[in-house]
Length: 146
Image (cartoon, rainbow, N blue to C red; front, side, top):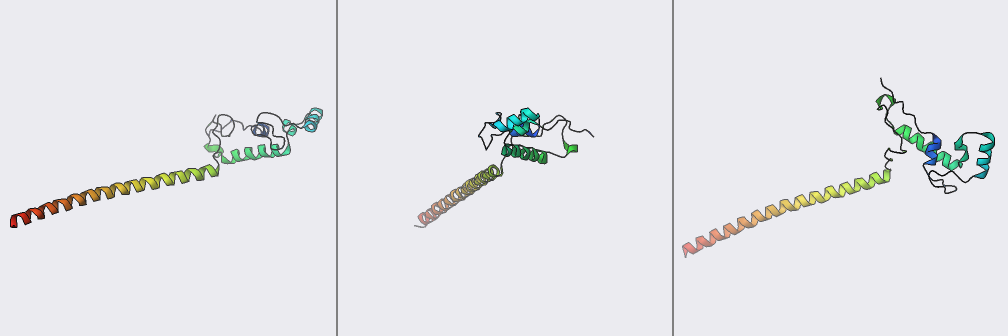
């Protein structure tokens, strides 16, 4: 059974892919947290510790969501990435899905109305033609009788 050996990006990479809600640092730019950076230099701990706690939590949350969305290990394609960073497509939010569903429903409804109008127009044209031919026939019969 082939297994996907592609490693998941770290929580630090996930955190750096999003802006910081605390200091408003842009994606890819480390947080402006001097005390955390000084502690990092002194202790030499994990680089994720240089970021604000909210950005760290967001990175862990996004990573956990990607891991949960990915197929089971035995169903993964070797070498394919299942994360939402980099070349992989970003996840579509439930709001976008609802909007797309409403748009599709409106298109379907318009198509149904268009088809119904076409059927009614066809029936109307047939009815007009039938009434006209009946009128002409009756007029011809009256003309013959007179």
